[in-house]
Length: 304
Ligand SMILES: [Ca+2]
Ligand SMILES: [Ca+2]
Image (cartoon, rainbow, N blue to C red; front, side, top):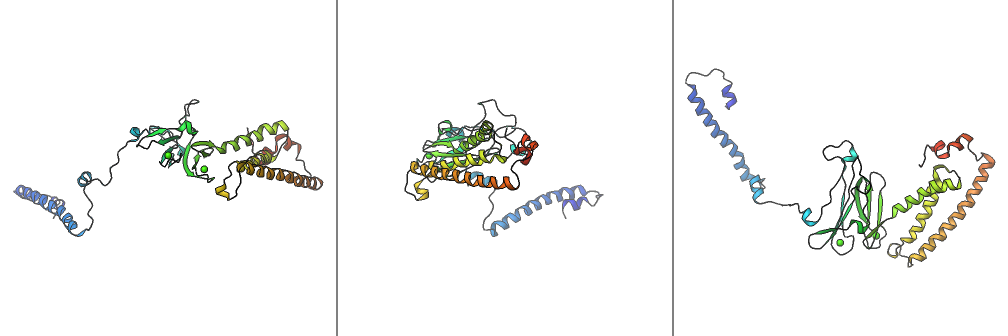
């Protein structure tokens, strides 16, 4: 009978106080004995006993100490509110890549950073950070020299030598525009930016300057962007990747010939199609659609 069973009897007989004390003492010993019994039993039968906290503290399986500041890893990771977070974007966190960006045989550290809903004054926003391994357990922040001082809602990063030149490149994902960095002997260049800037220029300034209207900005984004991409393919040409024994200059010239051929072919075929449509369905949209612009009237899109 346990203590609960004893107290359930209600009124106790006269003189039962002594009995109660004895039973309490007995129960305490019994409880102690019962508590010990399974442990003793398990000690004999279980091949791998779970160590107690005291034993773990005395013989730690792993012992990690935060040496980040001592090692020079002093960046502050910013990601949304410090005390409270309102939106999912504030909770997704960033990423890290440990890779040998300068090919010296020692792994370096690239840390992605985020932002806050309030934002920061110009030039004050937190950036990603690249730390160079000093070969002695310490690191040096080389973010600016390496060309990686970018801000935004960074989400993650992956490493890969996409052009097979022996230097590992970076792809950083964002809530917003992702960034592809080409590693040129330890100096990074964002190659994705070139395409974005040129296409934006073509779809806005060029479009207004030449007073043409093409739905979905086919010429500015796909035409100009495609030409740039074709030419940059020659710039980032690699013998190791293609197996073709040629120089970058030769490959750029080859790409240029391909671009010119495509432009001439595209112009000729488009002209034939335009003539055919003009004589059958009619080429022009309504005056109202023309006034509003094809991007908005046909697709509801615009670039400001
Ligand atoms: Ca290194
Ligand atoms: Ca590379």
